[in-house]
Length: 344
Image 1 (cartoon, rainbow, N blue to C red):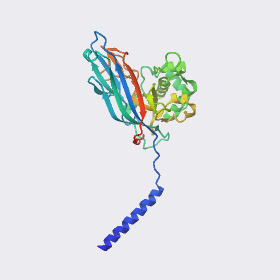
Image 2 (cartoon, rainbow, N blue to C red):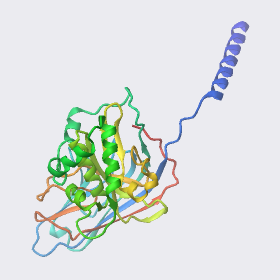
Image 3 (cartoon, rainbow, N blue to C red):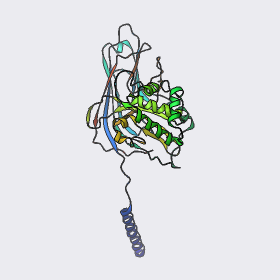
Image 4 (cartoon, one colour):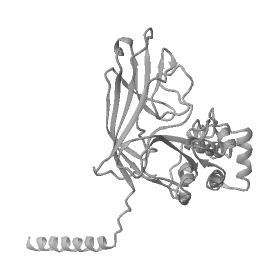
């Protein structure tokens, strides 16, 4: 019995020594840059006009899922009228839906959405790996087709062929398209026509905002047989810890075999050329994603045209688009511990 106890003690001591020795040589995994915020969006609904019958509102909610690079928690919807949570089946976009009767909107009211989000940097190694996840064939097929404002033939197709001539593989083609856009376009909000994400307009005008930059990138990529997709959300000010959110921001991803989905942000690269290399294969934490895709059909379906993109509330009064509702958003950086990213 004594020998057994002594042997056990020696074995335990040896195991402890081995563990300590291994700990000396172990290297902690690098922390993923993360930004944690408390966010609130408020939809301001006016009193319904006399003689109207139904007001329907779809309010976008923060995106969840493995492609979002964000963890959403404590989601709360506060509405004086009943609502239900909806889910768009093609892209996975989420929203709160309300159908308002005249008796429920005799006076203006607000619908408030609040949540906590940990936003992770999305940075991808551009070296192919056999361990990279493969995307479903049908998913890739969707991201090779045109959208209403992103044609793949005509001017866009010709430009894509010209700029990717001699390039091999998705990375090389996407890099040439990205470099072309940065060399020929500049970011601004001058004049009219910008902000619609019209790839042909962006191609001809050579300027615009993030939707214009990334619509041209997506169109040229798809025309070169590189799957590409559109993502949009709210921009977090980089140099502030709280306050109002002034605008949306969008970016794009393309698919490369052996790597997976690769993020790019040509608009931010145009605004800060010193980060052009970073924004090909990475996006920062100063954003919260709300939806993916273009030409969006909601459930229950809207009567109007598919949505060009979906980052602000959309409403219809008696079956026609209703732009009288307004919307604002605010954020506060949170000191709560953030979860680690699941990675790509």
